[in-house]
Image 1 (cartoon, one colour):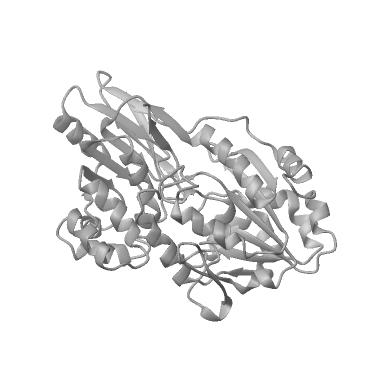
Image 2: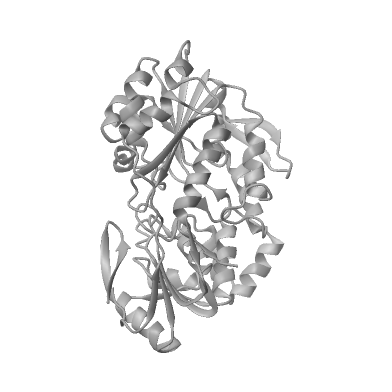
Length: 413
């Protein structure tokens, strides 16, 4: 039987014998939202004045939006609010976290037709620029709260984001616009170190120390915030939109995200094919999420095949340097216990999976770099699948996750 696996903005077909049990795990469906539904969310927000009323009397509006590593449909939201915003001469801040600034092409991807209108009032956050940061103290976990000063120069803040499960923050969206979105490097590094906690996992919020940090940062923000949160379906179309108070709109979007992105399974699989779908295939740093989510469906001793272009390469190379310095996944984990740098949480997550299963990578990464990350590079996806089937035998159970960075398999109890 033929199955299509996303690769970049195209797809690769693979054949799997019809005699084998194959499960395709895909996000579910909610009725697609239209522009009118976005307008309805703006007009009827959670615990907040309507969008128009929120803007009234403002003299300095700051709009915080995601960078190109997220599939957030910022341009579609701007279709609905750009004219209202323009009357208040807004500033836009790209929530890059520790990522690089967007390229010209990525800015146009983010803003769509609105880029020329707002480009001169748009800035990319730079986590490594101490002069741009304000020190707000510490979180309950001891993480320093360094945030971009622009939030204190505004009398209204608007955030546009998307909510889906996140492999160590619990969920994206909401408070994540501030931490790590516009946080300083030291803040991001300390926060991401908490990803080593067993409670730092997909779907977990209350007991998750990474999420706790994000919530604690919000308590220092006293300027009015209007949140616009979208939930996307498997086709990356808007399935839901929540707006208003940052916590209330986030919590509402989480409920809808769970309905879409969590997929029950009745047992673990011998072979898992997990793809990082565009734009999350930008690099290995982002594509690792497909490994982590895929591992939730994988038996010990199984084979996980990550499919991702990694078109920008590794991303943050700190975790690759660590892995290259170790001779086994166990050695990686041991080294992390003695020292930590931003990016090492990626090494830990990959090492945990590589320590119990084989990870094959179909990717544009140079084979030498893939091997450093304990990934076995392959040049032909069909051959990799055939080899895994031969290894696990005629009774092998196979799972395909076409959108592996956001699909969360849940093992039925």
